[in-house]
Length: 361
Image 1 (cartoon, helix red, strand yellow):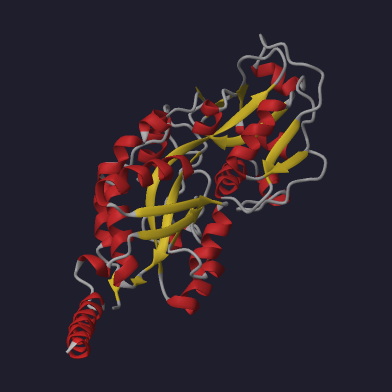
Image 2 (image 1 turned 30 degrees about the vertical axis):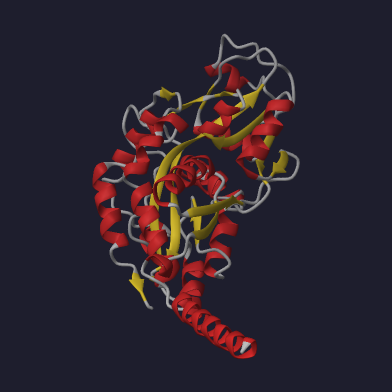
């Protein structure tokens, strides 16, 4: 009798376990979407991306793992499907776009934030500095090598500029911040454009200085080494308490980089039809450098999230909803992190672009 009882119990347990297994194998609506997605690339956008990730997890429970590694790496890893989405401050060029098309189809660019690239400096005894684009181009092409060069002294007559070699610090890796910076210098100096080049990895002349990884790498080096200058996103300068220069804009005004000055540049740039590559290759991409307007800071750029237009429902839907939130409600965190909020008309256009993402399963 005990044997029969045990047999019936075992049968009941087996039937129950089978039911559980069958039910667990049928995901409910909530279970069809991923609770974790991966992103990475541009260091320019990293501070606000970390803030968004933190806030969005509390709101929706989605974990957005974003790892800064440079725009070039963000493009490469997204197109190679190592990451679910990438971030870059330089829109994908023609070759990158064509390679991605062969790999998995069209890539869309979603503007996520706007910011200023500043010329951070560490010069003993100098508290403020004014520079022009032409002077910066000469420094980064090796034509101006001393801090007390007459051209720098001329526009900084009250500064006690030393007879010291300028150490120009630049990005060691392929970088969207380098693209913004070199694009600006290429606009104000034909010689710089020809000799050094414009792009994510310019051919910096030997002897002008040295390369450092990421915005934080340049910031750390400039902070700790005298007579240095380097280009970094505004927040990195503020976080590290590094002084930064005012730059003369197209209207002839020396402008201190601020979120408001970046907004002014973006407002002017968005009025201009983007006819030059890579901006002409993609919807919603804009060159913000050397913009017109008396209040425009001249070295500004947008950071873009990039993703394939065709997505799986499991990860694509959470990514789209995260980007929809980041480019609308999430913009309230921009100013406190020294970014410029996206204009309302751009947010509207972004929402329409996100609606075009196709879910293939």
